[in-house]
Structure formats: structure tokens, C-alpha cells
Image 1 (cartoon, rainbow, N blue to C red):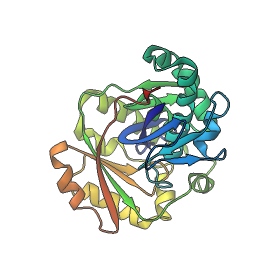
Image 2 (tube, one colour):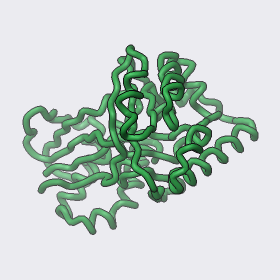
Image 3 (cartoon, one colour):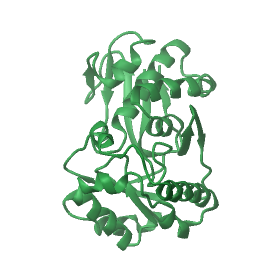
Length: 275
């Protein structure tokens, strides 16, 4: 049995803990004997912790998602473990999985500590999530996502300890306005609004202060003509959105001290591919 789960980019700039995007880079989680190039995981692995309450037998993971780079590895494999346990009980029935998504989101968010990454990996597309609910943002265009991935990693938990517990009302209003504009621009296809709509005053400056190469990559992406760019999750990866036919050139303009992945938005979310 195999579950295929997309990586994700969280926050999208201003939507801290509220917006997530699924990406066409996939982890595979399965129960049973591990196939070639897969890793059998022990009970402490995040996928196994998610799988254990409802699943039976050994679990394996095969994933190209970089660990500790802000592309939702832990969220994706947790979703994979939960969906694998669901598939053992209910099979590969698509309607049964769709009906279970709200409960799977609740469980995944409890394990992850926040819902943005796991909501995107579960539902696919760009997802807004709050109060235990998740709704896909309608998209009127299908851009390329150029991901600049450095060699160093960051810890989401550690980066969160550096964020202030209180913020000025002006900064809160700034982010609320940008988040609303971003959702509207994505739905309407107003790509000219995306650069302003992905600005942030809540978390990126604090995180970028500890990752100056990421700041340089973000600035370089915007200077090279990206529609928008943001720190992916807690970083250090930077996500840049552009037209599909401009992605190769944009990737070539990003700093050489990281590697690039040209991806798209994954619209399927978690998929059960075999029983």
C-alpha cells in the first residue's frame, strides 16, 4: 500500500500559519516491506507516530523533500502516515478519503503544531486554514514555483521562539490586508498585485536575520522579475512565483550558493495509489 503526498510551502509571506501551497515534489509512505530506495522507519519517525494509532505493521518512507528546509517534510510524512492508516481500514475509495479529510486535518495539525503545511499536503492547491477548517483558494492561473534551496537547515520550533509574542496593531493590519489581497489576487489572476500581496511584517524579517543568504535569494528573485517571492515556511528555502516560460531564466538568476527546483502547484493533495 502506497500513499503519495506533496511537499508544501507555508505562509506565502503574510499568511502566517494560515496559508499553505502544495508542491509537485512528493513523499511516498507505505505499509509493508520497504521497496527499493525506500527507508523502513522506526516508531519514532513522524510518519510512524501518525500511523501507529490506526495502522498495523511496518512502515516505510521514500522522499526527495529536503529535511529542515521549509518545504513541509514533517507535515507531508505525517499526512502520509495518517492516510496510510485510513487506507488500511477503508481501502483506496476516493469518496471515503474526501469525507475523512476534516478529521485527518485535525489529527495532522495536532501532531505538526500548526495546520498550514498539513492542510496543503492533504487537500492540494493553495489552502486557507483557521479554526480547524481548510478551504482551497480558487486559482485562475497555474504558475511555476522556483524554489531556491540552500545547503543549511533551520528548525521551525527554534525559529518560532525568536518571534515576538505581541505585535503592533499597524503590523497586524498590514498582514491582514496583504493576506486578503493575496487570496483575492490568486482567485482573480491579478499577478501584478502579488508582489505587494506577499509582503510581511510578522515573521520574515526575524527569520531572515538568521539566514542572510535567504534574504539575498529573495531579493534576487524579485529583481529578476518574479511575480512574488517569500520565505518558504520558516526557511531557509525561498519560493518564487512566475510564469512557466520564465522559470528557467529566473532560476538562473538566483544565488549560486543554493540549488533550485522548478515545480508547479500540486492540485491533487494526498493520494492513495495502491493497496
